[in-house]
Length: 159
Ligand SMILES: [Zn+2]
Image (cartoon, rainbow, N blue to C red; front, side, top):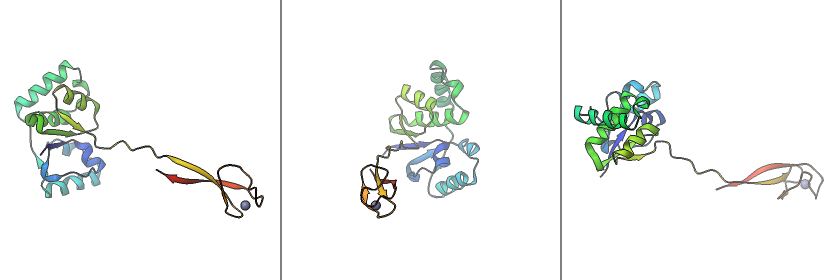
C-alpha cells in the first residue's frame, strides 16, 4: 500500500483522496485560504488524514538535494516539508502535487509523484449543421438545401 503525501493543492482543488493512507504536513494549513479548502482539510482529518511533521534529518536532506538541483528558490517551506515527509517513506511514498519544483526534487530522490489535477483528455468535438427551419441535419453548408432556411452549427458528439 502506498503512502500518499498530500500538498496543499489536494485540498485547494478538492482531489478525492484515500484519507486512511494519506499524510500531510502541518504547514499545509497555512496555505489554505478559501473556506472550501479549509473545510475539505477538516473533513479529511475527521476521516483519518494524518498530519505529521517531518524529521529534522529528512528536512536537511531535502534542503541539501534542492540546493544542488537549484530548486530551493522555488520551494516553499511547505513544499520542503512535503518532500521531507515523503523522503521518510522512501519507495512507499507517492507525493500528490502539481508543483514543478517538488516534482523535480522528488524525481532526483526516486520518490513517486501523482498529479492533483489530472490533465483532461481533450474533448473531441464533431460539428454538424442543423437547419433552423426544418431541423434537418447536414454535414456542412449555411443554407438548408431542402427548405432554404439558414443553418446553425451544433455539436454532434463529445468523445
Ligand atoms: Zn431546412
